[in-house]
Amino acid sequence: MSDPQQLASFSPTVRRVISRRVILAAVVATVCVVLANLLALRNPSRIVLSQSADHSLSPLTKNVLGALTNDVSAVVLFDRQADLFEPVKNLLTEYERMSPRLKLELIDPTRYPARAEEVQHELQLPIRSPENRVIFAANDSAKAINESELSILDLSDFMDTREARRTHFAGERLFTSAIVAVTEGRQTKVGLVTGHGEHKASDTGGQWGYSKFSSLLQQKGLLLQEISLAGTNAIPADCRMLIIAGPRTPYGAGELAKLREYIDIGGSLFALFNFYSLQRPTGLEKFLADYDFEIGLNQVSDSKNEQSGQGGLLLVDDLGSHPVTKPILGSTLQMLLPRSVGFPEPKEGDEPPPVKILARSSDAGQAVGQIQGNKGTIEKEGKIPLIAAKLHENGDQSPARIVVAGDSLFLGNSAIEAGANRNFAGLAVNWLLEHEHLLAITPRDVTEYRISLTRAEMTSIIWLLLLVLPGGTLGLGLLWWRRQMKRS
Image (cartoon, rainbow, N blue to C red; front, side, top):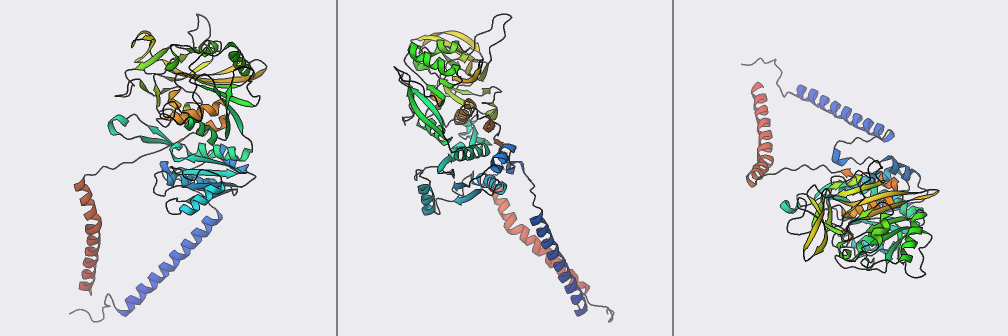
């Protein structure tokens, strides 16, 4: 028999002791939690635990937010199930925390269509937008950024997987640019040259239309206007940049003289050629030779980087280390039968001209000239330059900025969303307009973690979570209870 004076495990005395200890521990834990929260409220800090969730802001963005004198509205019109909703929300929450002038509103158009329509009506924006977007508004000015603009995609495995992998999130650069645009209170004028078969801003066609590129410029807060150089027409004095996109007929001497005068006083030029003008040079080839560019009368092919099943479509991944291309290094441009754009080989003892190559073909590239009946002569082999830029010094005048591309179709409506084409266009425009402070904000890397499970493995995990773990916990509890009962 057991000792009658021995205290049973669950006697009233033991239960009272255990109860007091539990209550005391709960009170102490509650006090600690309250004190920790009070300390956190008075001394807020932020710790990033994962690379992909890093939403710390660049010094430039902090300066822009700190200098705000008027209220800025940021309206996130996003489906909450969208992949980019969380990164967008987290980043703009950090903007709101940094500046009391920025007011953030999150609206899911699928759940609150009336509120979404009301906001867009107030800001005088198109209501029926097919995409999720973020809208910034201030000083009776608004700018929308579509979901498709927020990602830089890697298409290197697209032919095998039919998937475009998101490599970078460009939200901060676009959001800060939008805030600057809506708070400046003025619009920078940009001219799109017409009269020689160039792409038109109003054209919504697939390959030749430039309406999406035009929309990109307008989203940057730029005022786009079509400009003809014919006759007595002059380039407006307040035009900061000229775009000549895909001309197909020759320019006259008077028109080229106006262009020369414009560049010589510091105007910026974005010139884009294509294979349609191979048989009839535009005159711009010789004109740009005076500024150290060499535009070939050829088509560039690349057997190594040509997209399978689409002859002439080049996947260009050799990008130069230039402010325009640095943010998209590792990405791919898609170009259709581009012409070569480089600079002439310097003579022995001469310094090479200050022309920077922004994009090249692979070492399997070929520049084929004088194409007649699908045949032509090979002019160059190896890494063929396709896009180039130059900061042209003008003596006492402001330097001019020039970007020349051997393809204009890669910014057309059917191609601008491919690869990093849209991002390149935006970066080139920023550099040409001397918005280099926006180029300093680099896109954030996106870190992906994937777990591949078979159906059998998934079934095993479900049983483990729903049966084995709860059952095991219950079993351990019963064993402990039986042990205590035997002791008593």
